[in-house]
Image (cartoon, rainbow, N blue to C red; front, side, top):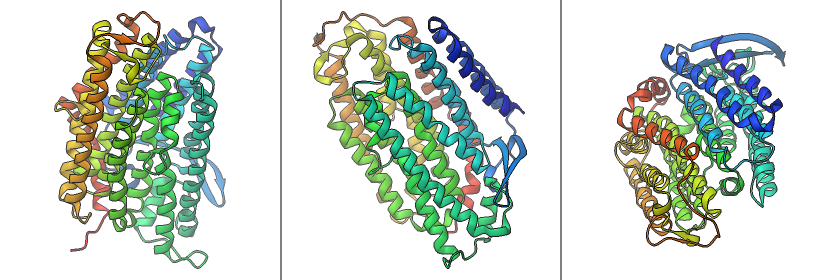
Length: 510
């Protein structure tokens, strides 16, 4: 029961830190957060799963214990890992300790509560990526909203209450829509399934067990369920046009919260899309390939154009996330080995790069107390190490070879350019690739204005090299980005193995 121990350690750590004195909370939270990270490395070293957990693959570290019965169907404590979920578990446990260290400088009030909520969020994120029973998964999914709401609403910026409420309302309403879509599938399956286990439901749908329900044909039921779940998960990703909560949440959230929001929470949406929409209902996804690909490309271009128009460094990085998630959606909808595998790899790569960018912007803000492009210049002279890492992270966002972002985008472009399941695939791919040009434009412009040239600062603060505990997490993230870019097979082989059954579930006409 290794996964149970991993999740339990995170929950217990959250409780311990919550009860600890404020002056100890930050250091204690960091020490305890290393335990789940060590556990995830052990899972990685001992991983022996194969295939996809939902399509009959060999699930690693599986535990299934019946919990209760609802409507004649059993609800179980059912957890396990495959090549898609394990990299996201490692990403989560890797980012949390770094985010905690990045909070040591800016968080100076109610520290025990702040760090306790961070660890509580980590525990629920681990549950989202390991749960294989829908009700268990949904409990973890909804529980993630609670600490994020308080972390933004209490420790955020001047408009923190507005941003926290907007985040909660958007994502909670989306969860309701997704829940209705999924439950309609379960009811349409009737007696062919006796539980809420995701593998059982997925395989029953693939076997053609959907039946007419309230006069709705199986084909239409599957399509309606797909659309409801897609819209629900699209808010969490987020993709255009349901992205408007994200910039407000990022701008008002403290730096370490932005790191986890961009690095892990957004991946909940793309992970759920892959699991529920593209694995459970591949034929419906293939039938809607053109509009989904269009939405993906619009998200890439529109998100990049919005970033180009911003003057707040945090907003620039926030809109960059909207653009990057568009690449993930494009990779998923093409239903090729490199497309789906590259999309999953890009989730991990973007988690690292976006975490680095938000963290570096936070370090600059700690020193200058401004994030506005016009308020500062020449920061490279005063903070050379921080600026050097920030520039390296920006080049990672632009897809510099031998960095994780390049590997993820390259896999997606290879998989999507000649995808048989997507009409006009070369056109969609070319349009998406143009987004990289816009990314280079706004990132280079922002860096030139703020980091180089004669020193200038509108605020009355002395700027010097950042403390070691601010710079160290940046360096660790940069090393991870380079390592994953140089050796992508660290994760990509297991990801591709789990992605193949998804690809094989689609029949391409002609």
